[in-house]
Length: 176
Image 1 (tube, helix red, strand yellow):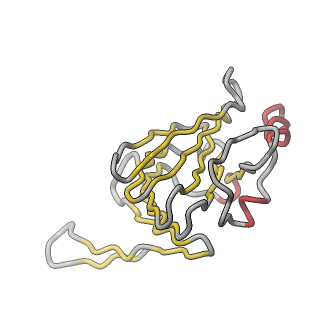
Image 2 (spheres, one colour):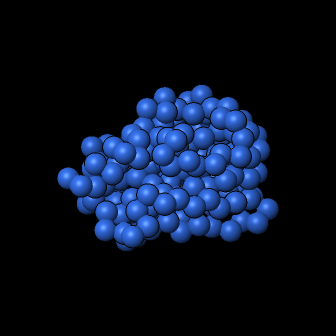
């Protein structure tokens, strides 16, 4: 991220970071001065059936996310990864659409992912905390032990997401 100062105090132009891969783009918008949210991500997804996730960060780098589909439609997934939770390992899906513009607030302790239901879907999410690669974990959304019901065939997914840990591995981490 780079910032350009203007003649008015406290007015800045931010050049956002854009990451591109086979699924589309993610634009990271930093939020300088925010006490809760550090950045906003815009996920542009080229193909219907694109999958992102399931992602989370271990403490002390857990994240709160507010997810909003701003164009198209997605099936959004959360997975409870809180060690002491009676619902550890349970998942839930939510339909989010650009026409509805409702948002899903996801607290710390949940893995998050989604599948696009239309081509050119765009998802905006606010994220608290900074990204810590050493605390970042991906759970494989296709793990048969989770039995997550994806409504469409996967058209695009990152190798990192396919190589995510299994629910059994996540459970072993819980016991450590």
